[in-house]
Image 1: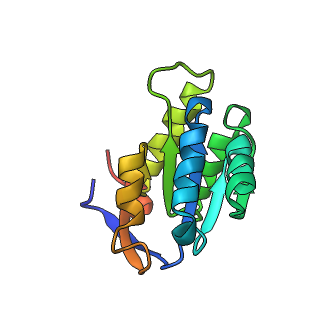
Image 2: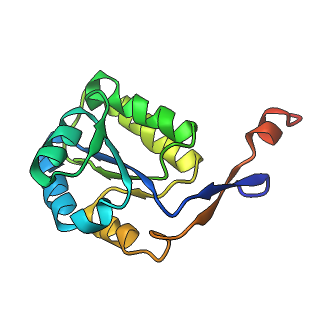
Length: 153
């Protein structure tokens, strides 16, 4: 994958997507409250109810999109494609089926394709938030899609 790459600059102030399935919303709220001081230094985005609940519980400003099943996952994915989301915290429920599972899979695929960090549990989210890159610029490598589209098959 990394043979035909280009780089993108990720600024010190990050744009962070916060997403949680219903059974994990309380975990997300508690995690955001615990890390409120660090999160307050960055731009936060979230899907529907998750964004609203985080804002109400923590007073952190979270730009809300549609609910996940109503297209919010796809809206976040679009922001990743446009370079407007730097990393994602997605507390998902791996034990339940969701009607929008294809959207969730597409979101995870886009995040992986664009090489953005993804935390799907509290431990990984803690690691990301305490990373030395949290408050510094970071150069991210991504596929050079122009070369990919112009490749000879």
